[in-house]
Image (cartoon, rainbow, N blue to C red; front, side, top):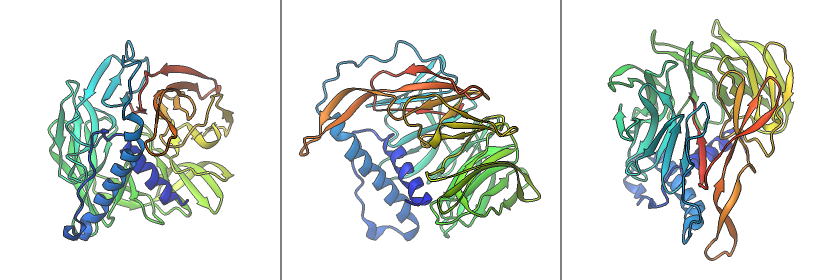
Length: 389
């Protein structure tokens, strides 16, 4: 599976995980759709198909033995969403039910006065950026047909992309409080992957393309810089509080995780960690830019010294969903195999038992020592999503 195919699979699965099990497949009449609208609709249809296949059989006919939520929000330093028949966001002492009348909805990260979301009015319909407020209401901001959202370092602004109808896209910066458009930039990409917003500006690339190059847009000056990087493998992390980024490169089965700072339009590499085998599409770097996470091998690398530390956590540590840093030295990890199945159902027509409800366990790892301890175990839910703080 190529890097592009891996990212597409993970994106569709992440969208499927957020669609209510009451959703219906879209009624597609492709003969009436313009070529420019075909890809977003196919992606939405694939996501709907995935969730119908995966979740409806799991939830049909269940008699829940434990419907009670956790007694109180877990003491985690980042927001998280419990996803089941309903979605509930927890952010320290705040508990916010997520409205179910916004179709397919995904919460991404914390912003000023709430949490950034992307949502679709109906399966296969129109997508928007929204701000989930503490009272549970969603305020839509920006243009229709928005794809993706990324918050500014101070959380007062967000950026999204919108197809421009000419085979490219328009990047739009929006004020979170008022929804006012503050800046825009046209790029020649039909699909834009928003990768991060740090001290340098907004990092992006052409998404779902066989080959692509990282691009930096500074919305304060309008400068667009294409950063040439041989072997770039669709992976970039740009912590908001740092000017250092982490990228993945690949040649055949040989891969490298590289950190550095932008100098004269090029990445001045200051640490390189390489190996073979396994995908590294979703690199993770600590907020201070000092620690690299190698999820596939459960290792962390100190950027300054090169020291490699093993993370002592049970279960497989997936690259997607990415682990989330709680602070500069503590990493929150949701491992595969860390949940206990508490209910199962028989798939109709197949007779196979499938997990229907799982207690998910979040581990807190100290990246300086590698020690990991269970920080939170969820009530029985379909999924748990950790968010960027």
